[in-house]
Length: 269
Image (tube, rainbow, N blue to C red; front, side):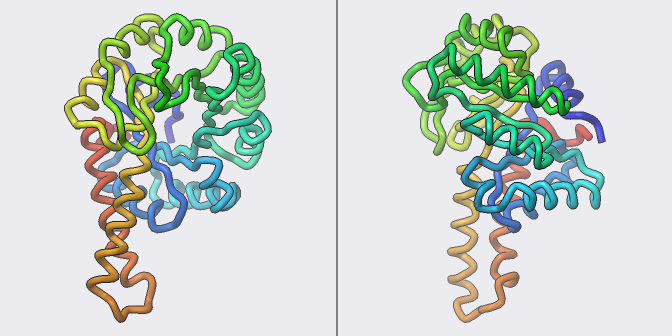
C-alpha cells in the first residue's frame, strides 16, 4: 500500500481530493469499504473523539486494518478533531495512521505550542498531522499570513481551513479567500471540513483552487437515519438486524460513491 503522503502529493499535483469519511458503527464502515473497493479510491476513515470513545480506539484500528488487509485497499485511519496532546498521543500509540489536532479553541501561540508537541511525537512514529487555526464554522475565516506562519512553525503536513463552511452543512465556500491561503502556504495540502451541504460546483472549484482533502460526516449520518427509517417502514415486523441494516449500508454506500466521484479520487489506487 502506498503512503498517505504519496496520495497527498498526487492529489495536490493532479487536482483531486482525498475523501475522509467518518464512522461510528460497522454498517457505516462496511458501506465506505464497499464503495472504496468498487471505485478503487484511497480513503481516509475518520473517528472524532466522541466516535472513537464509542467504538474504542483499538476496535477502530482493528476493523480498518482487517478490511485494508482483506481487500488490499489504501485505507488510512485518522483521529478527527483531537482536542489535546494526550488524546492525539493515545491515537498514535493505539495505531492510528494519522491524526488531526484541533487547537482552534486555544489562543494562537498556545495552539502553535501544542501542535508542535503533537507533531514532534507523531513524527517520531512516522505519523502525519493535520493542524487547524480558526474553528470550522466560526465567523473568523483563516488568515492567510497566520496560516503560513503556523505551518512553518509547527511542521504540520496539512491544514484544515475555515473558508466559510461549517459542520452540519451550512455556509458557502469563499473561493477568493481560499486562493489567498493557497498562495501563502504553497504545496501544503489544504483540508475542507463541513462540506456535506456544499454544492457540487463549489466543491469542484475548491479542489481546482487547492483543496486536497474533504471531510464528509453529516451526509453519512443522514443517509444512515433515512435508510433505517425506510427499512423499518418496509420491514415493520422484521427482528433480524442484518435484514434491515442492508438498506442502511446501501444508502450510505450511495453517498460515499457520489462523493468519491465528485472529489475525483476514483481509480487512483
